[in-house]
Length: 597
Image 1 (cartoon, rainbow, N blue to C red):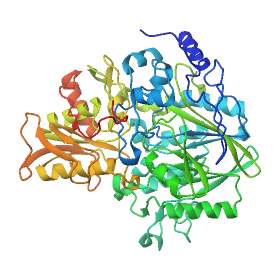
Image 2: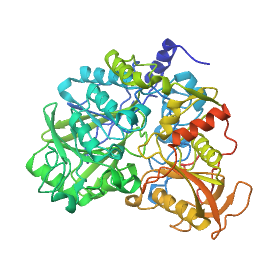
Image 3: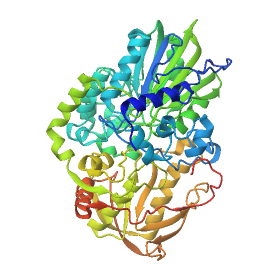
Image 4: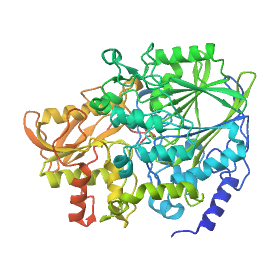
């Protein structure tokens, strides 16, 4: 049963008054200081009580979603080793208990997968740049334009058909209109290097990344030597930081782009740039900024992923706050990490435009004295769309809207992606690869982006593009040995479950079709994957070859059609999209882990 906008606002008001909305606990602690909490008694979920003199807003991983969407949070987000049971590796009822969230509330809907279908019908879609702009403008007006700063953690120019067809230009324009002041990147670098530079030139804010360098061979005759962000002496490709005057304070914003871009994505698009975590360089930048710029606060806008940020915060001192992204984790409270210099706050602000992080800082006597943080769900039913942004979105979509709205099939069940091992929309992709390619097994990347379709809804071409739209979408069908298939699974599992966060790349497990296996995430590389079997129960043999279909090759370009054409062909034929079998592995060694429902 759906509810009206008026009823929804009333529910939100009651939830806020009961302290059930994100950030109702006001934390007022500085590094090494005393923490106190006070309940905010308010009826308007977006009426944030003012605290301090600086308001930093943070969005990340919107993946080019200009319109409101549905997005189901994971039911499996396992933490291994020291990460076990630690944010962000808590899901479902354990998540509610950890953060003191009441079940069956708007907040529970925003932060968990629980009762998702019914909750989605009740509370509606989330995100949308027109609705997000309304919220950002309101906060700027209430807190003061000179006291606010909007930061974007990246993964902004990729994830939709219009972003692909405009080479990210639609998102640059949207971010300019939204008023993004500073950003860093990841999927931005899956366009060609000249396109990246051109988009950054069109971006009205500052693009920062301390961990991207021009390699030695290219530096002698660098083709972008005239780009303002390039520094010939350090060979940094982009500005490492920017100083912003906010609320009478000098704020240093350092950028940390995704460190594994040339490994996780095609190096051929960006051949002259090297990446990496580079925490020693980060420490040097922080020290230099502290010594030379004399900022009142140092913050990092990061695309490391939360586990990597937590480790970096323990190793690098002098950072007040890390605003994190990449792993799509909606974390209602910052994690306070102790290091040699005091305490660093680590946050992560979800994905798909679903949340806006709001960090208020009390900055006096040249340092942060306290903070208040709220991660606000962007409920599209609760925020009126900004007219100017809505008009812009309509115009950039207009040339493509007929193709985007093509109805391919009807969803028989909830179709989602996010989760460590498989999602129902991933299974549709895997089934399409096998059916159209005539393969025994299919492999599909464990990307964390991709919107959700409710049961009974039409699956449009736009929905398919939301799941598949990348700049290297070509498919393949090839022979692989059983040993090679196991090696692929082991390699991806190590990227996900390595006990050292610096060896993690932040995605989820490769999705499989026609194949089952057992996994023990806590074991070491080479011994996590066992008992591989085809759908009919036949064991996979190491020295036997199998026909495998897949897409998104990082090395050389694959020969087949784009994946969205394969999936669209399959869905048009199916008419009703059913998940015939969900190839989810048997997971062992995780008993009692709060990262699995």
